Length: 69
Image 1 (tube, rainbow, N blue to C red):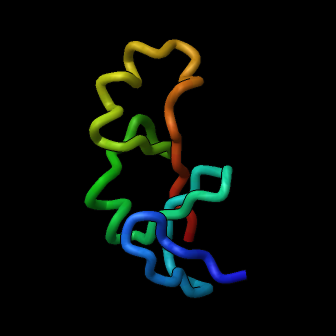
Image 2 (image 1 turned 120 degrees about the horizontal axis):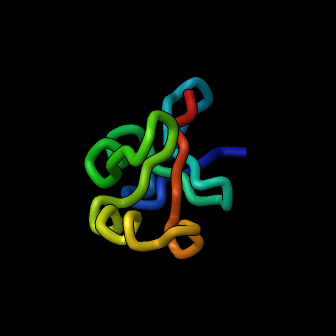
Image 3 (image 1 turned 90 degrees about the horizontal axis):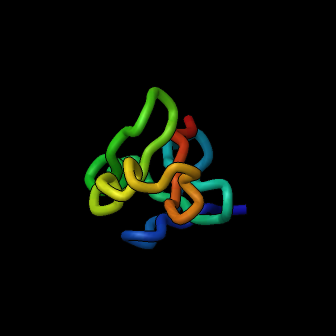
């Protein structure tokens, strides 16, 4: 199955690094680097959601990505 970047619609080829939210949304490395910010050593959220990360104790309303390679 070919993964497609949610932001730029490019194909993510096997062996490429990408960001995955675990629910079927993928970001290529370039779009992830531009749009995401790290919340700990393994998880990333959209920059515009970063403030909400601290306000949401359970992180239930945030789309959290992991870096895959």
